[in-house]
Length: 138
Ligand code: ZN
Image (cartoon, rainbow, N blue to C red; front, side):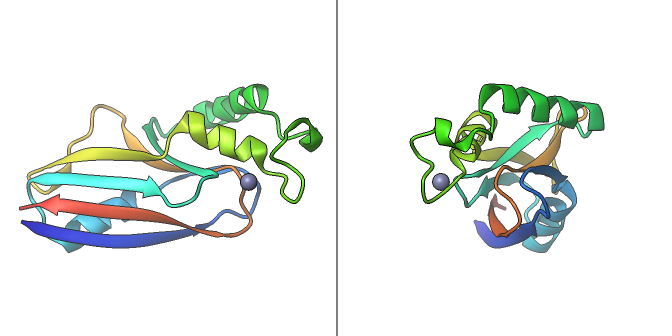
């Protein structure tokens, strides 16, 4: 069995943002040489997410509005977690958007459903953060 590991680094220049990381994951898959197997992609930070959905700007705006309704950033003193930090909302946004995705690899390709793409979701940005890509298979 082949095994491959790589960390991808992202620095989103704003508090929140979404990045389509499918091209980077496909590059990892090519490097791994795996034809049949599984890829795990997970955020290595507790205020960021990795998730799968459609690459559509209206939808990304809708996520932003929805997540701000569920866990508004302001006022920061509404959260017990905040004191030294101001990112309680980012922990909650990460919780609902998820930590990781697993995608099947078939014939050396990511075996997606229609319109599926992999995204990095940042909820406490303006600093460098990592995403782990782990690929196993033959
Ligand atoms: Zn925190």
